[in-house]
Image (tube, rainbow, N blue to C red; front, side, top):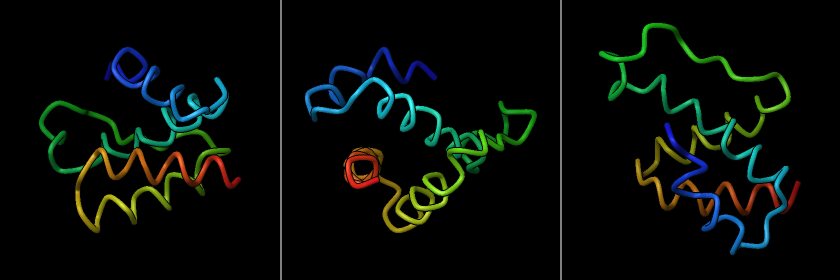
Length: 82
């Protein structure tokens, strides 16, 4: 995934720090475990310990609507209120 290439400027416009952008980048790797990637991802992504809470919250959001833009909006809200 080229997350930073495509989404860094979007997230910076939301006034996130570099650390917050990195947290979102790392937390959204839970998506690699979704069925859409099962044919190309050989190992389950478990993420870093310090992103587990954010990953769980984002996973719940993803299950609701499977919309990446809404997921990013929720991620921004969560990291700003951390």
